[in-house]
Image: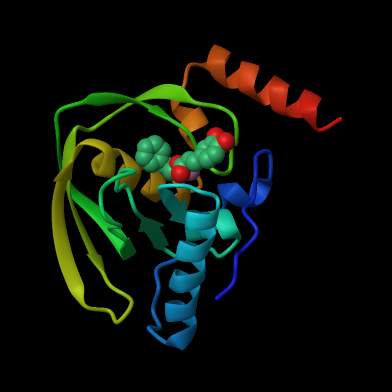
Length: 166
Ligand code: QAP
Ligand code: CO
């Protein structure tokens, strides 16, 4: 297992749209294991393959709290098939470290995906895990949470990132 490098804004590779996984082999299993290791060591609660410069439709998540047991979940070729309600959550992102802003998303959803072996499953969820799934699928589409902020807030963040890089 290895810890992978996480791309950070303004890296243009975060804008690539990931392709569906077609081959369910040992390399996919290793990618998922490496993504868990990378996410846990960050630490973070979700990580999309796009963030580690692999442009395939895969993400991992574990939104278990401090006291609760680990709940590692992985999703290959995920599709949200139903959404309900709205919620506002103060999101962060390992690709935009140090910035946290409120984002409005669906409160609950149903996601269909396959596992590392290509076995289909469906999950109905709400709250933080629902936020995480929407955030990670955005990554697979080349989208970041900052894109969902007002132009003013997004520009403030972009300027701070630019300043810190020089
Ligand atoms: C996406 O985000 C997410 O700024 C995962 O300095 C966001 O793991 C899922 C992190 C909201 C559910 C709700 C961010 C770590 C981690 C930072 C993360 C930082 C260190 C973000
Ligand atoms: Co993110």
